[in-house]
Amino acid sequence: MSRVDVRKTYKLFIGGKFPRSESGRSYEVFSAGRGRRFLANAAQGSRKDARDAVRAARAALPGWAGATAYNRGQVLYRVAEVMESRRTQFVAEVQAAEGVTAARAEATVSAAIDRWVWYAGWSDKYAQVLGGLNPVAGPYFDISAPEPTGVVAALAPQRSSLLGLVSVVAPIVVAGNTAVVLASEERPVPAITLAEALATSDVPGGVINLITGRTAEVAPWLASHLDVNAIDLTGAADAQDVSWGELEAAAAENLKRVLRPAGSDEQAVEPDFAPVPGLHRLEAFLETKTVWHPKGR
Amino acid sequence: MSSQTVTAEATERARDILGVTRLTNQALSGWLHGLPGVDEVGADARAATLGTRSIKTTAKAWAIDTAISMIDLTTLEGADTAGKVRSLCTKARTPDPAHLDTPRVAAVCVYNDMVAVAREAVAGTGVNVAAVSTAFPSGRASIAVKLADTRDAVEAGADEIDMVIDRGAFLSGRYLHVFEEIAQVRQACRRDGDAPDAHLKVILETGELVTYDNVRRASWLAMLAGADFIKTSTGKVSPAATLPVTMIMLEAVRDWRALTGEMVGVKPAGGIRSSKDAIRHLVVVNEVAGEEWLTPQWFRFGASSLLNDLLLQRHKLATGAYSGPDYVTID
Image 1 (cartoon, rainbow over the protein chains, first blue to last red):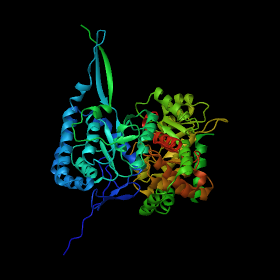
Image 2 (image 1 turned 90 degrees about the vertical axis):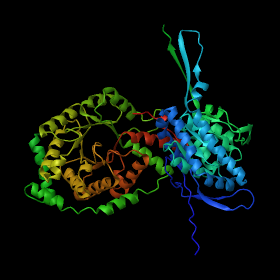
Image 3 (image 1 turned 180 degrees about the vertical axis):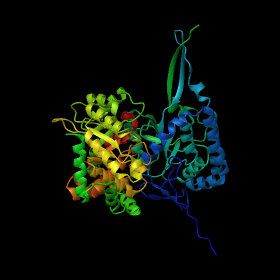
């Protein structure tokens, strides 16, 4: 007797929970490459889901920003551990989502896991590299220290469904920001599985929130949201009907920090996420606080 | 007029309504327990159904402004200071300095000793001052203390008095005692000469009344004793105002008007924090009591953080972008 398929209904990840979209909508997700086949129905998030996610991220911010750097590093490392134990699932999903060979998918998943470890290591080191003691002409210690910007919205890369996603999210949260992430519109399945990995790791609820859906529909609401402090527009490259210039203009209303997509002018391109990234993504979501302190004798 | 004659008036009226020659505890019990029981499951279901009404665009804008104008902006903390009360009053006068078309709230609600401060801070603005008296929130004091407490607030210039009923007496069936206390406090709200009397809001503390039947009985008892408003809770006991409880109280004021022709106001207080909650309440007001109650004169929200959420929703409607807590004041 043949078994009935257990088909999964994918949901959003907001505040550590997996709610359905407030709108009740979902959309079909297909595999990439040759032999386009139906993969899943993903939740089609709405502006209200984005609003709820921002609220969850705001609520999680004090706890996460106040955690010690050491603790945040451990939490990020734990994500790598949990991903490692679901490696086969990730490989299969990346392969289907991106239409690559098994070997290539295997390498991508390894790189994604390693990226968590790489950023985890930075948690208690970036402050020394990006901040420090400034030489001043007076009897003062003058210290610059980087601090988290706050709630960061991120458009995840459209093509690199897992490695790109991790490369965008990890630098946001390692510094103590909380994130509202719009997953790749056409390739959301690895992102949802990452959310399941996050939910079973030590990442506190609300620190990373993940919305699947139409980028062009939800992104403007995040860009104009006054309670979002920064926005990463990496995923505007190759997104349908998305003009990153308009998003940046909307973001100006409350002076959000904006990380522009790679490329020149309107021609946004998705960067290659394979090489070791450097600190520019981490630095984009930090505020430098400078303190003057009298030296005394 | 002496206190004796006034409470005698209340008693006489109660006798008329009950159709008895002597107002005894037994007569009151018989009357209150003769009220139809509340179908608890039905009440919850009806409130939940009304809560699903979708209120959008212009109706939503109207509801938000109406809700703002119905707020009794409240601070009832042991740590209250004159400065905090003044800043609350500033917010009551101008809820949103960036949008001056925002309506004012109905009143500020403070402890007795802050009445004079609040009175001065809202003078000439049309914002009322409400004081919580009668040994708020527990009400565990002698009647002499409760009356002195009330007179104190009235003399300091309170426009409205929020009193608590003696829940212990109510729950043990001493209804006449509760009746007399309310009638006496009502009397203490009077002012000499032409000065308007202070409005009396009677707090039932529904969270301690246990059943919906008791909520209905307490509502009728308070109205019988001369309440201008019936109020759900002190905000110090959980659960505070819930939608079904407010609905049952609205049914009571509706039926009271049918019986006597008098209108009594309703004030849910405590636990209403979001615009959505407030709008749900307005829907219930409209459906249960009727449109006449949709004014600050007959319906109030006892709240503090609700105002900020209403302001954020107002921003959202005006600008089309989601706003955030950075754009409203904390208190």
